[in-house]
Length: 325
Image (tube, rainbow, N blue to C red; front, top):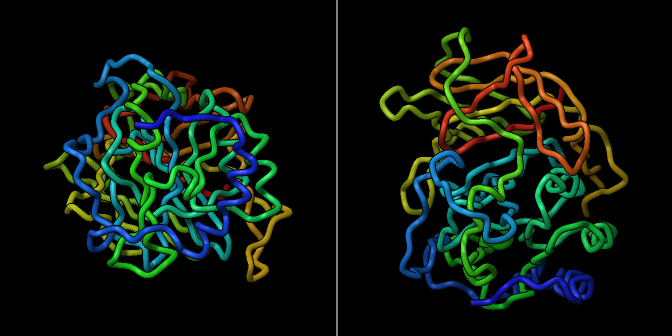
């Protein structure tokens, strides 16, 4: 098992960008990118309040593809927190944060964005696993207070699945990067878990639209969870598990052009996760109005009810959709 190291990270990030783009990593032996068996199963999306484990190190954040050719994803159900952000052309991408457990495999893995660096400042030296990044962004990633793990830096941690075409077939074996899951105390997001506040409005389904993408969350009373659909397709992992967070946060944020562009010339949006604004919180089959504030990048985000009381989340996985205000 390999431990994470920071030395020489700039050289690795730049040198291995081509590996991630060209798809020259070893092909995996599973159809559709299913996880290789290492003797352990993904968690059942436990919440920080349910695990009670001690902090053994930094969280693992993985950029996950959700383009039309990417599903089904692998390991997404095991994440403690999933962020959805806007990228080029009005499309979306996910960042899954793992602390309570490390699944056998995660993916498909895609490239990092500038917005990720601000979002990840809330954690102490998190590990960021990604396929690559725009050349001009690489120095920012190298200078950020995180441990970059681009594809190929630890060769046996990465593989190509056989059921999808590149670039939608790159997968990570998290336990080749980290000895163990860090535990819930590494989740310095500022989230609070507990009983729901009074009030709220009954809600059976809520859709959030990006210019060229959409997320729909449908309440399942039987499961006590929100069933996720991306671009109209139910989100089910490669091993048949329905992705079903206990809490969904629709966080209204500022999204504006950055100085970066993709290879087609499309501008890369920058999503501001520092500041304040309004939000909708879905839990227990109800929707609650909320406010959010994150004064500094090094702190988590505090959610409150309109009267200023803490906004508790339901125990379980949390999805945060960073929607343009």
